[in-house]
View 1: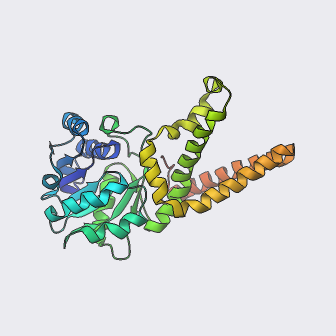
View 2: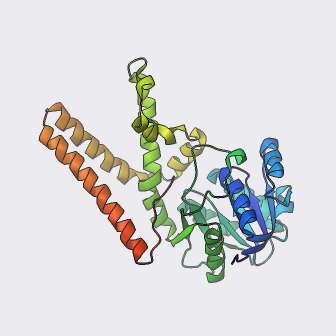
View 3: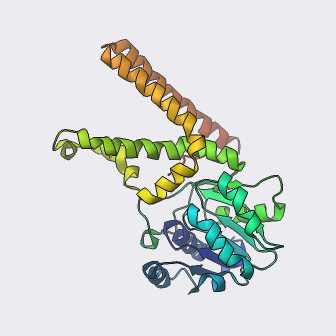
Amino acid sequence: MTVRVAERLAILGLGLLGGSVALAARHRGLAAQIVGSGRSRESVATAGRSGAFDAVVPLEEAVRDADLVLLATPVSAMAGVLRRAAPALASGCVVTDVGSVKAALTETLPGLLPPGARFVGSHPMAGSHERGMQHARADLFEGAVCLVTPTASSDAGAVARVEALWRGLGGRVERCSPDAHDAAVGWVSHVPHALAFAFAAALRSAPPGATALAGPGFRDFTRIARSDAELWSEILTLNRKALAGPLQAFSQQLAALAHALDAGDADAVARLLSEARETLSQAAVGHESKARSGGEKPEIRD
């Protein structure tokens, strides 16, 4: 049975995530009315043709009378968008977001709201290296972990509304603090992207024609390095404090592997690789155990 989570859902930002939320919400009947607002003519036109929106209108009009507002712009644009939207927000409106970095947003966005409006951060661990409304999918969030990041002062009803949204879209909700979010996502999403980008940049030193010989392993490893550079530059910079530890740990492991290879120590190389495999196996067992006990930790997608 479909549970409606909003009478008027306003989606500000018509890219992959905002468009996918609209398509999924329409497909699942989560809102009586879905309205969108975007910056570029192309995204507005694509959204209008998608059938997901009842209307695509200017920002201030989109949020008027909305009881649930989703910020689906790049993180750096969210504060400016919310400042523009704030005068038109109704009392009781709940605002959430899809940002990949939570601590900075939690410090900034609640203070921009008018009296009676409430903010609860969220982040669906779903996406693609593709960008834009034209790549939006109604099934993007099915089975994906959706992190909701309330603070001690968050309104319980607002938190429940945001969690209901992501469950209604097919996600598996997990709640954590903004700081815990940034630390964990730094390990499982941000650092992998940083490493893929760094490796892709290092390919400038590869022998001519080497990439033409690449197989599935190369494609799997480098896929996320095709992600939008501007977007990921912003994410990595905003979460730089949480990334320092993981990057140092990776550097130490890479240095140990390089040292073992330089020494021709096959036993040490095998030991490092075996330890890596065991770490992944233990992580997988932990996920399965939590899922069986009622927790919500499926495989995280980037």
